[in-house]
Image 1: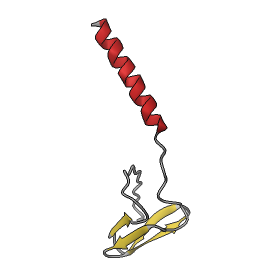
Image 2: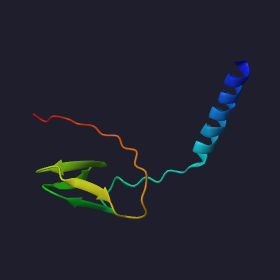
Image 3: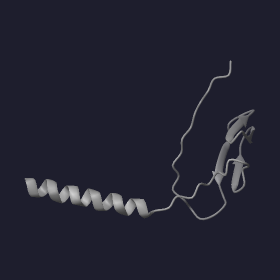
Length: 80
């Protein structure tokens, strides 16, 4: 049992070392929507480094290069 735990720990450590070699490219530059396309109702703008929606949500998607994996963080607020 100890050998299995040891092998699993070594495998996990090597996997995390491999993951650290991957470099991430930030797609949103915080200034404008270069490389992004908006379709649907409303529009999207950049204010203080944040993408804001106006008059509807629509869909914003990346067109500025090859397919990418996307990791996103979002914050919703109710202005009322």
